[in-house]
Image (tube, rainbow, N blue to C red; front, side):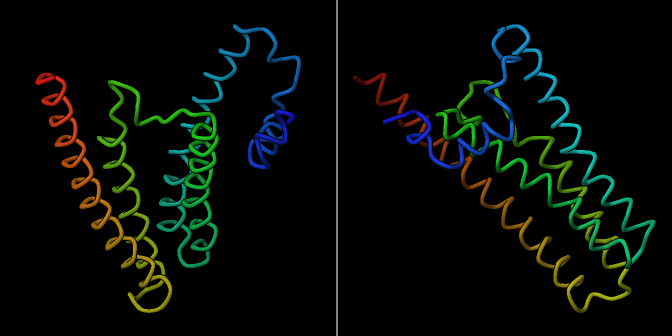
Length: 170
């Protein structure tokens, strides 16, 4: 079976969109530098678009809400594609020792989210309708996410302690 067929549509599409078959990627140093530069650019967009969305709803008011919503959500979609591509190749960012992705970044993103929702409610002039529901849903979802992360961290630590205790007793 060919590698393209085995990889499936997602990896084939990602390789085509990323032009990964280009001779540009043949030289290792060039490829590594390009990958690092791409990661920096991705992180810049990941933070700038939601920040611009917040500014848009506060400055532009109600007419800016649909566009700001797109600016706020598109980085999340891009993140899912990045995570899906890495996972399809057997790489999970959470498995890397020393990486603590859920600390300050999540708090910063939640601050952006709260500012965005407050701006949407302010722009719409009420907490009724779509905007009010979106803001309420974000706040409730964020609270549930914090609880889920806390539970996940506690369960993970408990499993790690049990695994290390089991390894020492064997």
